[in-house]
Length: 127
Image (cartoon, rainbow, N blue to C red; front, side, top):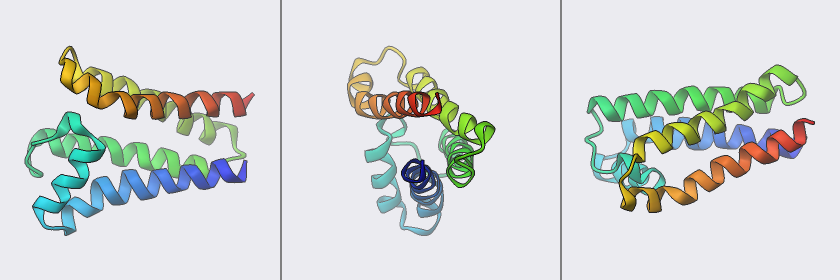
C-alpha cells in the first residue's frame, strides 16, 4: 500500500496541483499552455484566463487534494475510497468534455485508459 500511497501523492500534488494549477500561473503563457494541451488535449487552445480553463484548473485542484489525501491516509478506507472515486469522476468528466468529437476522443483515449485503469487497480487493492 505504501507504493500506491506514494503514487497518489505524486499524481495528486505533482500532476493535478503543480503541473495543472501552479505551473500555468508562474510559467510564461506559451509554456503553460503547452504542458496543459499535451496532458489534456480536450482543453487545448483555451486561454489560461478563460472561464473554461479556470473551471478545468479548479476541478483538477479538487482531484489533486482528494488524491494526495488518499495517498497520505492510504490505510484509511474513507480517504482511499475518495481518492479512488476521483479517478472515475475525472474519467466521466473527460468523457463529457470530448463528447462526440472523434478527433478529441482519439486524443483522450490514453488519459481515459490511465484514469480507468488506475480506478480498477485501486478497486482491486481495496478489497
